Length: 78
Image (cartoon, rainbow, N blue to C red; front, side):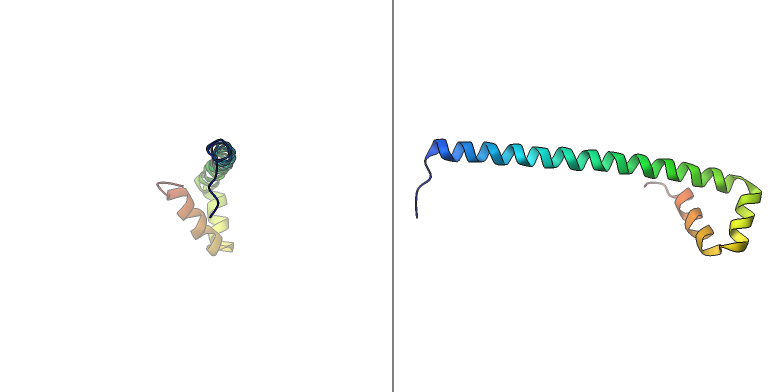
């Protein structure tokens, strides 16, 4: 098995660490954007269900969606 010279090994490790850091930053950005979108959607659903006429309509016409909206609106965490 061929020995890797230290400068080559260090350069390779540095490239891999930079690549890993970029991947982590991209994942953090995507998570942040997704969490923001979920928070906005949850807020909107709460507002819809807070309107008695709209909540009654959804419950009467789409009980499947109503139960999912209710679960989203009352969830402690996203």
